[in-house]
Amino acid sequence: MIISLLQCGTTDTNNTYNCNTKDKKEQDSPTVLNICKNTGDNEGIIMSGTDVKKPSNKEEFVKIVLQAAQKETGVKNKPTKPTIIGTAKEMDIHRDTLYSWLKEFNVDFKEIINCMPTQNIDEKFSGPTYLIGESLLGEGNEVAHVDLMIGDKNGPVGQAFATGMASLSAGHTPLLAVIRPNLPPKPYTLIVPKVTVKNMADTGKIFGPAQAAVAKAVADAAEEGIIPTTKLDEWVIIVSVFIHPQATDYRKIYQYNYGATKMALQRALIKYPSLDKIIYDKDRAKHPIMGFKVPRLWRPPYLQIALDAPSLEGAKKVIEQLPGSDRIILEVGTPLIKRYGTRVINEIREIAKDKFIIADLKTLDVGKVEVDIAYEDTADAVVASGLAPAETLDATVQEAKRLGTYAIIDMLNVEDVLTKLKSIKDFPDIIILHRGIDQETGKSSGLERIKTIREAFPNKKFLIAVAGGIVPETAKEALEKGADILIVGRYVTQSKDVERSVRDFLELTPNMREDVDLYRVHTE
Image (cartoon, rainbow, N blue to C red; front, side, top):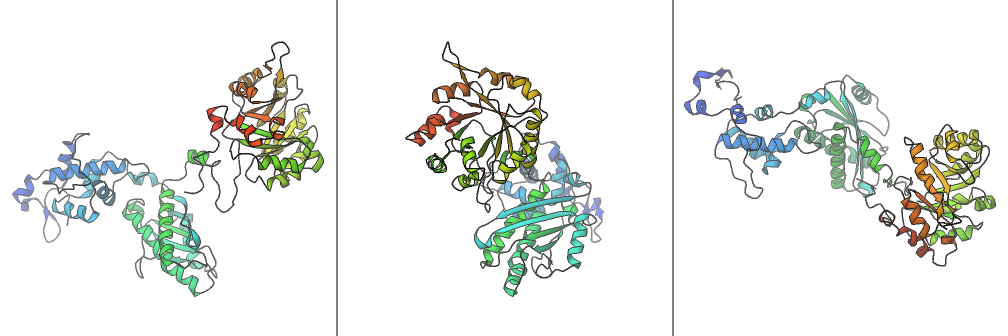
């Protein structure tokens, strides 16, 4: 057995400490604590991954192990306490080799842990524990999707565990995870099939590779320190697994469910995902089963193509010629809606399922009703006229926010934009300004209002769109003045080369040239 070096003595046959029976060599051997004290922060022996040599003495061995343990705990999302398996990996040796060296040099790994100024991992779980993890891995019929809960036996997870064991359901019978018959992992783990088990072939997949995979993942997570060893008898785990009825490859069923369970456990224990992760990915992500992207305006600038001509076929021809770009959004113009109704949005959606589509209703009254109508026909945003009464604009913005669509106010012919914006209770997502032409200089006028509005409402989150004779020459000026969206009509829709005309805008600035978000996340 390994004897604590922080205590005096060896053990006799009764396993009691006896200082007097220590031999001279062992008495002169430096303790782990003393070696730790004599090892500076930057001192240590680096073992090459290609030339791993056994340490020549205990002092050298302790320094190497200490350095590897510190390196392990410095890795992001690793447990705060080092583990033997993780330390062995950092030393580039097998864990069994580390075990044998610990025994040979009479070192207790717990002493290495005590030498390190690390936070006790158990402090993270000192109160009631109720954690949730999820993971999807693999492909084809063998794909694995795992949802799990981990927590205290005397808490809600423990209650659900006991209820599941005692309340059997036809086709969804829970079962304990076992590495092999008569060998369950700890914490005890209950497996619940998501898909109804209808025959013995389905039963074999659950009671065979899936059961073993979940059990092995839990056991490995305990060995690697993902699950604190002090919680192995205090926690229980519930794992819900997806096994496709047409899955046939037992090896893949095992491999995918092992990986998914291990990943879900790791995520649960670090409370993944963080809010920063969610915010970063939520508008990039595309659900693999849904099959289409739900665009949001989070990465300006954008080019808004105004489909104003009252011809559905003409609008479709324009859309079909547009280049692929995240920067392009579509506006179903007022004439098009007046001719076909808001149902035309559904028609356009058939050929532009991933596009952000705006319904330019120019609402002047009954704002809530018009938002509802456009929403039912899948519009992503609705435009109200800034000339409408404040009550109508409030109703429009409030209903749009309730439904999760964008509220846009078009300030065409509104003389005092700031006064209008201050008169409404809820701020819109987008404000449309119209560019004028200075009669004396021939330059754009009205763009200075972009800065004025932003300064007047510094704590509001909104985008500013610019319309009115926008061509590449004037568009660059608008972008420089702070415009987020360029609204373009005839320059594109009446062009003989629609793609080339759109590219004229997309190549204006480095940001516009980033057509597609290369960091978009589909799966992990």
